[in-house]
Length: 473
Image (cartoon, rainbow, N blue to C red; front, side, top):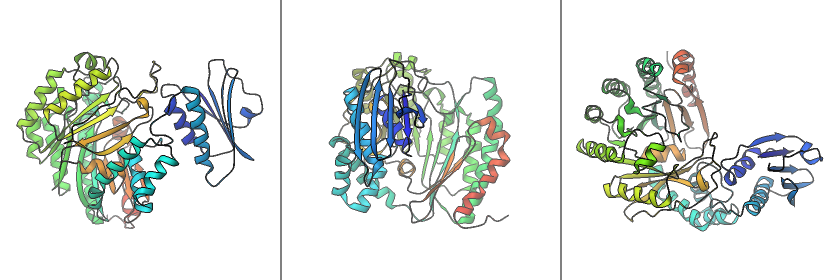
């Protein structure tokens, strides 16, 4: 699929709209006038989208001899007008209407929160429906989640922050995964891990020093990955000791133990001894055949046994993840998996929709077949979306009353600063009392993180500069 951009800066939104309708197709973006001067040569089976702004706005779809064209006058919001035009042509060409309309961003509930704050509840929902063409169902969902998040966001103080620790190692790589992670059964990863843990502890110490000097108040800690419980119990103990030595951890403390084949009683004891009160046990499916196709080295029975083991260690909150649309799964199979997880009564259930990787071989057409119903005692409390998600649908966190994960809300709605440590971690700095954000990017891969560690530590000085302070030496 080719997207031609002529004389306008709206390539990001136009590209994402194309992906909403064709999530598995490779998309090539071309800038210039050749697309509209008759010199564009397109293979018969290729799809070309031409978007142009000059005396008016023109959007055209070409596929072989087929042409679909719309033209509109310039106006107050040319980007929105162009998006509506492209959406109209893509819907006409495919017969498909994405339920999120023109919204392609990760955070629809963040937009709803801002509109509710600035324009009021009714106007916010009206803008979703009438301007962004979001379905009534998805508009209500965004509004429901925004209302649920508001009390959590209200807890935010001018200098509060959350701490994220990245452990980018897993026991094996899942077929659907797009995260940066290394499998621990490789000798190279085994050699990396001890040095990596030592380096992360050093970064934690520097980050704690900066936070203390700036008078920042820790709201929550989240150790994610990868799979943090890929570390040994001793390595987990070392990591948690470093956290307690450098931060006053008194509230929410979460660890992803997502792969049940990494969970042991010894590791759980270490985590509980260090005050971890939230843990994730993520089956993704309760169908052994689907798990095998996904590259998961465990069975549904292993999930049940790991869940019982976690419950025996008295964590205050357990989250379980499922993914709709995994290879080999069907809507009825996903429903059965969800029912089995609901029967366990975890405090949180996060339902993801499969995001099709760039290298996917199958042309998976958008679908909304993987619809589901949650029991009334579970309420949606946060949401996000991914590019190329099946059916252009959303990921939703569901919670029993009183068990919202504050980190998930603050991270997704960008309501306060997130300080990140470890490979692949991105620090997000939020200016107190404003919506201004600045990102300080870490180093992506563990070996790069170790090799360029001093350079990364120098970047941490930006945290103090952002808050208008100089780090004491």
